[in-house]
Length: 126
Length: 175
Image (cartoon, rainbow over all chains, first blue to last red; front, side, top):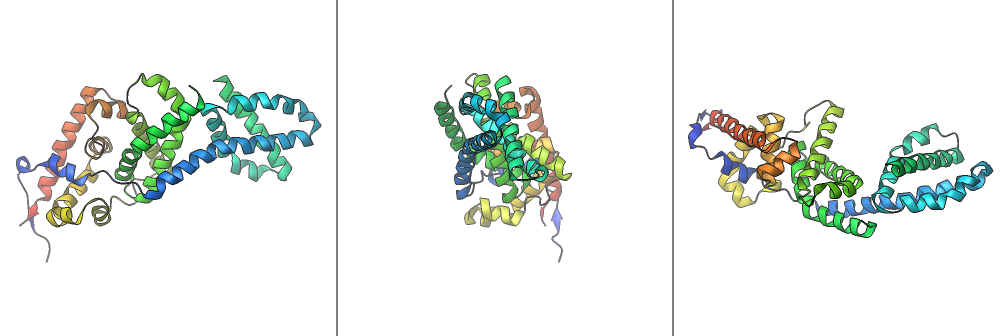
C-alpha cells in the first residue's frame, strides 16, 4: 500500500533543528590522512627524481653540459618551500603526454628535463 | 617563511580541517569515493598556493579559503563530467554512515525527508546550508568561501531555509 502523506504546516517544522541532525559532520576514512601525508611527501620527493633525470640527460649530451653546470643553482632555488612542490606538480601533470610523445627512454628523460627547466623558470619568474 | 615552518603550518592546517573539507566534499558530491578524491585534490591545490595564502590572509582563518578550493574543484568535476552527482546522497548509506543507531530509530523518516529536501535546492543554497550546518561556519566565513558579501550570504541562507521549509512541508507526514 502506498505511503499516504498529508502536508504539514510549514510554520510547525523545525527545519534548522532537522538540518543540524541530518547534516552531521562526516568522519574521513582512517587511511585518507595517511594517504594525504604520503602524497604530499612524494610531491616533494618527485623534484629530486626529476632533477636526477635532468642530470642524466645533460651528462649524455655535451650540448647540455652548460645547463648541467647551472643546475645546482636552480635546484637550490626550487628545492625550497612551495616552489619545489609547484614545479614537481606541473612536471608530473605533463608526464603521460611526454611518455606518449617520446621515441625512446632517453628522449623521455630529455623532455622531462626540459619541462623541469621550463617550470623552474616560471616559478622563479613569479 | 622557511620550508620547515611552512610545512609545519600546513600540517597544522590540514589536521585541523581535514574533517571539514571531507564533510563538505561528501555532502557536495554525495559519495565517499569522490569525496576522498576531492579532499585529496583540495589539499594538494592548497599546498601549492599555501605560502601566498598565508601572506594574504593577514591572520584570518584559512578554512573559507580551503572550502573555496574544494568548491571550485567540485564545480570543475561536474563541468568535466557534464553532469550533476551521479549518485545523489544515498539516504540509506548516508544515514548508516553518519548517524548512530539511536538517531535512526528516533528520526529516520525525518532525516531522510530533510536530505531529500536539501537535494532539491539550487546549488548555491544547498552549499550555504552544508557550510552552515555540517561545518558550523558563520555568515562571514561562508561569505568568504562563496565570494559574496556578508549581507548577500545572510539573505541566501534565509531563503534556503524558507525554501526547504516549504519543500519539507509539502512532503508531508505519514497520514
